[in-house]
Amino acid sequence: MAHQGLQQVQKQAQTLVLAPQLRQSLKILQAATLELRNSILEELQQNPTLEELPIEGISLEQETSEANQEATDNDNVSNDEMQLSEEDYSKLSQLDEDYREYYTQEASNSVYTSEDAQRRQHFFDSLVSETSLQEHLIRQADLCDMTPTMKEGVDYLIGSLDDRGFLTTTLSDAALMTRLPLQDMQAASDLLKTLDPPGIGTKDLQDCLLTQLELMEREDTLAAEIIRDHYELLLRHRIPDIARKAGASVDEIQFAIEEIAALDPAPGSKFSDDNNRVVVPDVTVEKQDDTWVIILNNDYIPRLRISPAYKEMIATGKIVGKDKEYIREKIRAGRFLMNSIEQRQQTIERITEEILKYQLEFFEHGVSKLRPLTMNQIAQTVGVHETTVSRAIANKFIETPHGVFEFKYFFTPGYQGKNGQSVSNKSIKDRIAHIIGDENPAKPLSDQEVVKILAEEDVKIARRTVAKYREELGILPTNLRRRFH
Image (cartoon, rainbow, N blue to C red; front, side, top):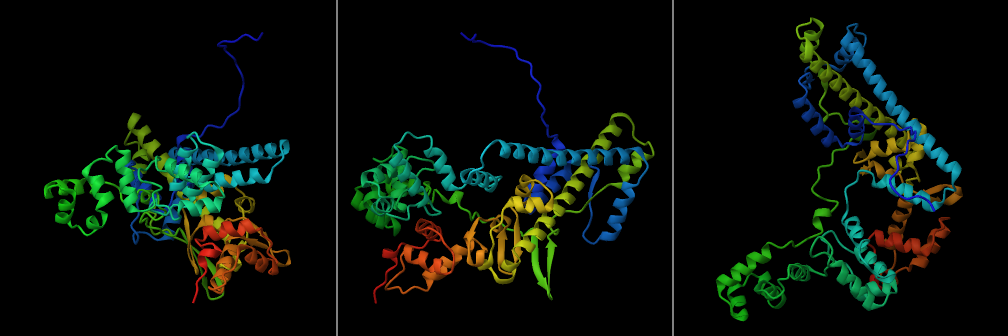
């Protein structure tokens, strides 16, 4: 019998530990423009050796000349700092190589399936992204005890919520779409309403407010009675009429309305994609004459330099001991920050160049010409690891002649199309939207008919895929699109 208990075991392992400066470099790489600006302004307050150059204070040529002079400076402080920076970046390079070697070994020891590819793509797409309402609810639902059919019903209802958190379908329609018993769909709806945030999964505002009071165990209060029995009067703010019908005083009604006002009328809105967020394109791609030009947006990124006063203090020996070591450390941190910002901009520019080369027809003609593209393809061309590309494009936007898009928009799977060419799924969605938009309202096309039309264009996809894309586009099923004249 094997001996069980605590044991001391000594083993040898090789790991790569990220220093704080390397973590800062990765953070800068994946930061959005405005987020990066805030981080730089915070560093300016904490690091006395850093200075922000005024916009008109110094030319780019002059700044480049100063940087080159610093690189060739013979004093010990400058040499030490530059060696440290090069060493740190070599560690980042080594980190990429280790990831490459790891994935190569994994691939040689196991069969890489389509499910593995989907999971891996989901990982990169989810990196540093904000949690959506659906993700928030699915995580909670996964912790609940339910049957497989009930789980299917919950997942379908979660996917049927609008930005406010209300259901966009009836339970009977949901049961028909999923082919589940209506009682299972009702049970799924009851479970969904117990999840956070309170009021989620309800059919309308009245149901949402009542559900919140029920979860607070206040379903027998005057506030609940007003919502349940006198909702139309409440919407018109007819307080005297409500008081008369409810048999309560005006003050009691007013107090109950204040309680109702404290409830959340749109529990899902805090997770909405549109949080009034200011989007600043990190890159602009535009055509000047007959040439496509890439313009990096540096307007929101403060230009930095090391204060000459502190460099002079160290060079002339005006400070010694702990003060000197403190200033040296701040100068190192400042230079590493500037190098990280420069590397970030260079990486974004190189990735944009490759996207422009690969998706040139998109920039010329629009969404219908978008081609399938993976991060691994760009990573191999740029010469970095796939994770570096994923970090570099996270939360970043590119302005094109066809609008402002997230960088992630250009990375999409696809299908074999006409003449063996690849067609992205976004292009197929765009084509489905046009096909349905041109249909006869009295005789709307079925999903199978859309499949046949696409097949005639040498795009072969399954009917369930068309149904999935149609739902993602917010297009109703055939029976709900029919219009009689």
